[in-house]
Image (cartoon, rainbow, N blue to C red; front, side, top):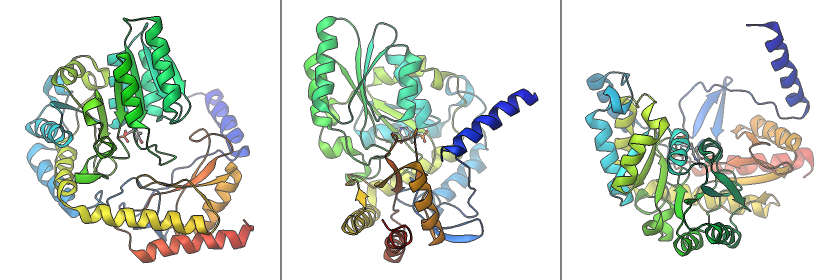
Length: 394
Ligand SMILES: *Cc1c(COP(=O)(O)O)cnc(C)c1O
């Protein structure tokens, strides 16, 4: 280690702090749940993607323990070498049947699924058409692919269709991949999936949808693609086991040929050690729950609606939630930090979201209720926002 490197890092960190953009890691002292202890304080957790409260559910933990007893803690190699077990195959089959596709391929995370899949499907000479607010892992996948990338304004189906048509008009042979989040992670809205699917059909383009914030939250525990009725038009359906499913792992569901191609050519599948059996078993247990237990989703959606309605009526700039993300836009990074601090003082753990995660001037508090919160928890959040208004006069 050289002093020069440490000096450079320290100086860049100083710049971030001066712009209110410094980020720090805050370790929890209890598992993910509706209420947690952090820095010695009991807080209501409002910024976890563990929407259904499954990440610390004893049924998942029991399944993981049994799998650890049977399969150990590490898988030892990538799936193509010696890292494949019966459990991996079982989860792939279960996910394929859940999504109504021929096959499914499991990656170690959603991030790895995105970068490996996009780079395996398009390359130099091809085009990716991508929503401006797509997740960082999609953006990184586009860059890795070295395909031409055209972004369209967020959720603007007309602009997307025009781009796809223009690219196809120029070149009848190139591959075109249109890629979008279904539920957007920082805005909480749903992509215009039916219109995007139509544009792809008309122009011989492939449609890839990232359901990271949707899987488990809609009817039957599926995502927005099924809720909107476009499942038959989605060529590449990507999801994660790390959010509503309370475990770890990413997946791509689609045709058998697509999945076999990814098993051969997605570098983040080929060269990455496979998930341990414990994580896979926890995902299997989560699927059992999300497919049968509608009550969790109902409670989650009630909390989401109440938070959004109540904060809006108190004058906050709330983006209308389509799934379970309630973004409260406050403006500058400094305002978001200040409001985050006041919420903290009132027992609410909800971290400010600042650039570059969101565009400058739209820093926000992103609230994520959980199915396992009770109404008192939600009341406490609403009360904490009221306290913010009193303290900073918003
Ligand atoms: C979280 C997220 C991912 C990454 O999934 P992980 O399993 O956490 O790696 C991918 N896409 C979107 C839209 C996400 O929100």
